[in-house]
Image 1 (cartoon, rainbow, N blue to C red):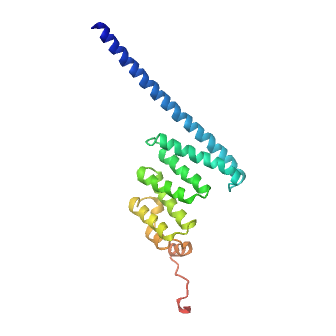
Image 2: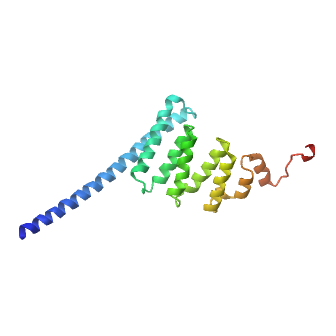
Image 3: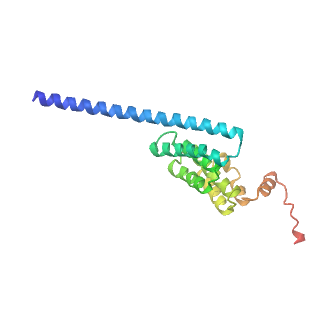
Amino acid sequence: MCVFLHEKILMKNILILSLVLCLFSACNQRKKEIENITALQLALDSVMKQKPVLLPADRVHAENLAKAYHNFVKNYPDDSLASKYMFQEAVRKQIMQDYPATLEILTTIPEKYPASKEAPDAITAAAAICENFLKDCDKAAYYLKQLGNQYPDHPAAVNIDMQIQYVCDPQGYLNAVRGEADTTDLSAE
């Protein structure tokens, strides 16, 4: 009986030690991934300071960093850095002018991390990409409505109805905000 009890205690201690080692290893792996991301960020920042537009030969820096962000979020989806890194991945995809991938990431952030600081910023960025790069005014208006509905107190939601009305018409929006009358001469039509 005593031998059995000692074996049971020994097995329990081995199990606890194994669990502690696994946790330590996971924390160490997380730290390594963050260090790798930091190094990749520095490398890309160095390239971007020299030339603000990525040349095809320099895309590898942005691609590697985007992959590192993606892998971190995949490995640690509940980590406090997950939504931030996901947003940064979208920024890198935008730099590479991969707008479909950028939009996919940006729209996933408010779904997975609705309470994060990045969620309303992601919706705002998605609207801007649709408006400025894809020239999809309906989709931009859709994202602006989503921003107004889900995050009405966010600074980007100020004048949201007016932003939606003048989506893809920045001059019209500026005139409306300033309270200036429309200078279009309707009698000429």
